[in-house]
Image (tube, rainbow, N blue to C red):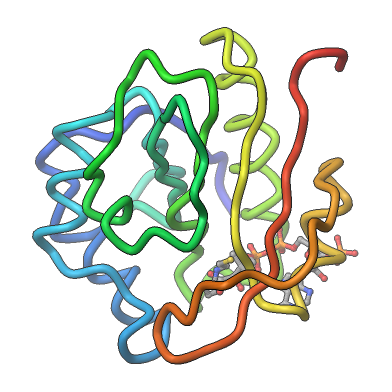
Length: 166
Ligand SMILES: CC(C)(COP(=O)(O)OP(=O)(O)OC[C@H]1O[C@@H](n2cnc3c(N)ncnc32)[C@H](O)[C@@H]1OP(=O)(O)O)[C@@H](O)C(=O)NCCC(=O)NCCS
């Protein structure tokens, strides 16, 4: 594969991000176009895209908050988001199926973690399905156990990564 580049999102990326989100997440799990637009406009500092010389391959987006409530569905619409918040809550980590299994999520996660450190954030939270616990553990995330969230009608685990002494 040709070289890849990671940058912050811009509004023109909306259609491609929505395409990747829709094709990669099943059913209700995928964010709507409206939700993705809100994430682009509300917190572009926390929305990174990875691209090759042709197209966007994958992305990570998030919100910032002073108080973490991972089962709060409204936060997915960034209700309660405050860019000054010290805690980061990841909303999507996604790679287009055509590019999965090639280390693209690792590139995105490593860059995302460095960017959040540079912004002075204290920690990163996420919910994930059981089979991805090991993947996130590789980046230093700690398993916090089962989540109350039933997002998309599925069961989830909560994980967090402290950025303070790394
Ligand atoms: C999960 C996802 C982002 C991984 O992207 P990717 O680019 O294929 O991941 P990478 O190639 O960087 O893999 C990183 C490591 O995680 C592991 N991994 C990747 N996907 C995995 C999966 N679905 N289950 C278990 N382990 C997985 C890989 O084996 C790899 O380990 P390795 O380096 O020892 O081979 C991608 O499969 C995806 O977009 N899935 C749909 C959306 C989704 O579920 N996102 C997660 C929301 S919590």
